[in-house]
Length: 243
Image 1 (cartoon, rainbow, N blue to C red):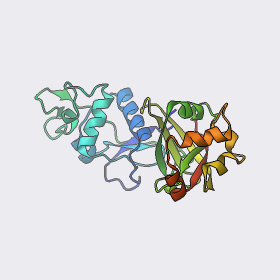
Image 2 (cartoon, rainbow, N blue to C red; image 1 turned 90 degrees about the vertical axis):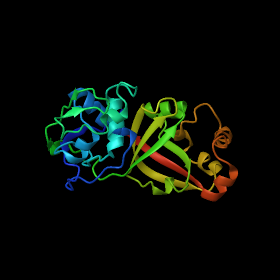
Image 3 (cartoon, rainbow, N blue to C red; image 1 turned 90 degrees about the horizontal axis):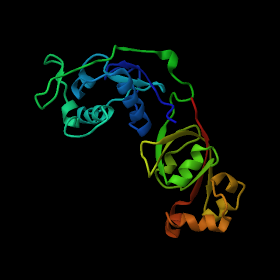
Image 4 (cartoon, rainbow, N blue to C red; image 1 turned 135 degrees about the vertical axis):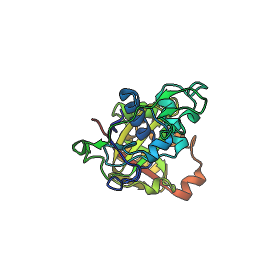
């Protein structure tokens, strides 16, 4: 479930709303808004026209390059084919009568009304750092059902940026558009996978029907013992976030 929503539109340079880090969850929220409201405009309007920069319910504005906005708009239209390629929405040339397209086809732009509903900013999301991680189908589904509440990773450079209270957006190797959003409750550090799976965290790791020894062996499908020794192991305790 994506708990991120677009709550309004502001200017690209509006410093009242800090810039967001692009994420799957943010992109999905924007694409949903574009489809539901029927907005259609290019990357130059996104950057230069008043009220064409989306604001999310975590209080951030999402600022894209013109080409990246073109890709978002093409995806929102349900296709990234020759008919609606990202270059068709790279620039809508709103200074040229508001018609979109680099191929000579006139497509009337539809712009949002500027304004942000600040009452919809979520205290649970506001000011939180967002991380993205990918999972195989089985652990992803287990988190989605609320059964797996500890994600096991190496404590590498990326994971060392994770703090309690942060938000993690998990997506699946099978479908990167299917996401689940969680909040980090606590971080548990170990020097070996064996130590983690021997602890009270083991039942929370989603290792259903296997022994702790088998769970350790399964981790070596993804990581080497050398990596384990170099980085150590991290148990990320999480809770599902819902609307």
